[in-house]
Length: 199
Image (tube, rainbow, N blue to C red; front, side, top):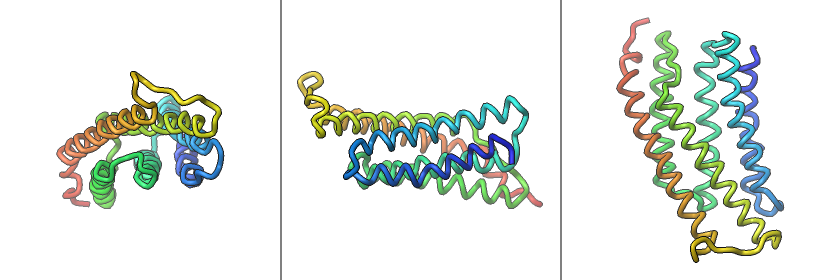
């Protein structure tokens, strides 16, 4: 297994640790630990692709596992956000539905001997989701510092920071949902024929 593929596997391994810290509010600075782990996982996504292209190490395993690792990472975070009241359920359901549909097409294509790599819209979708998740985690850590008394409570434009952060987070999740649905339609349109390919 080459280095880019090892980084992809590491990204999947980091997910349970990320979820552990995110869902344990009793641990001080737990949002910070979750943010660091998620950011590290997200960086491996950038790094493995860069190394694979630079060293000509693009493999079918990487083409299949890289986007799958992204899905595991992002969906885990969003499901936790719903549990914590940081994301609307309907947005996360749409995002997960999109991932199930796309993964089903990808698996059917593989069964027919066709490996479908991620397209630019899929990458845009992933970037929008990572930005939303990282930003929300950073906002929550700031609020955690206020709760812990490490930071004085403050307002933004006369509105409490918690309310502003909540609204910004909602908008970011909404944008990520739009790109998820839109990229899903593009993906289906471009690749639906792959599942009808004769072996």
